[in-house]
Amino acid sequence: MISLLVGIGLLAWTTNFIGWEKIILAFKVFSFRAGMIILSLTVLANLVRSWRWQTILRNQGYRVPIFRVLEYYLSGNALAFFMPMVIFGGEIFRGYDLKEKYAMPWSKSIASVVIDRISEFTIYTVATILGLVFFVANANLPSYRIDIIIFSVFFLIIALIGLFYFKSFKKESIVRFFLKKFNAQKLDGAETAIEVEKEIFRYFKPNKKIMWQGFGLSFLAELIFLARTFLLILFLGKNISVFSAVSIGAFSSLALILPIPAALGSHDFVQSFVFTALGLGAGTGAAYVLVIRGAEMILALAGLFFFFRLGIHFLQSFLLEKIGKLFNH
Image (spheres, rainbow, N blue to C red):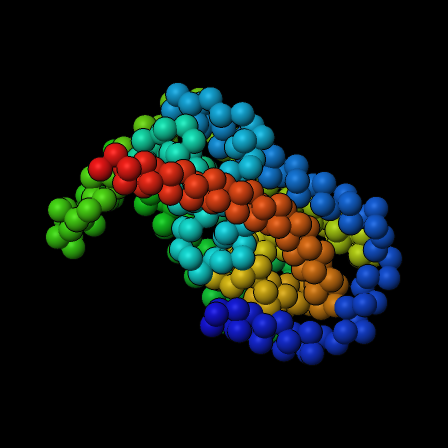
């Protein structure tokens, strides 16, 4: 609730600062056809993401139809979109879906989701770093301190990613380290966490084709999102270079890290700054965010439908199981 209020406050401040007349003006050349193209690219990117997750599941020995995978993917993303404050809520729900429907061990179902996220996050990180570099090189920044903040984020991200792959390739357990550090080896779920990590390490090996296939599909999804950014800004009547589009995409990724429903306010605030620094205008930045949020929300609403349908199905199964046990006694 607090995060939603913060988002609403940021949105109100940003729109008041920019002015609705500038935002409306940015939509002057935007058409329904352009909106459908943006929505189609958003759907296509999510299909590619689902395909990536399907390859991970197939590598674990489970064949799940692509549209069933998409259904699970959208349902999990809907939870993350509307309730990002529930940490890893979407990922846990996706793993639970697989466990219930395909009788997958909990360690394998959760591992598949974590592997999917790591594959995506790795490529996102590379794209974000490139975007930050292009932004600092091309933007008209008001202070050198902003450069320092951006590069601090840049090096922190590199360090975290580097640590994971260093440990992964050497097969050194990160989970065991933290369990031992906090004397939590006997906690419920400790063994499951270790099994999940083993599954992850089995996947991320430099000599395994499946790992590079996952990176390739993540790269393809990132290219689709880049095309979406590039075309949307053209549809809003502004000329833009590919480098600037990469920068805008990078800041979109950073804005979505904040646990605010639908990135309300945070995305608007960040992009108004970025678009102004790139000479595209804060009004165009606000319009850009509104279109992106609209496309993402359509998919999130579809995912919400799947979420409730699956949730009701599992609730019915749970109640029938309990009633059956009651009568057996």
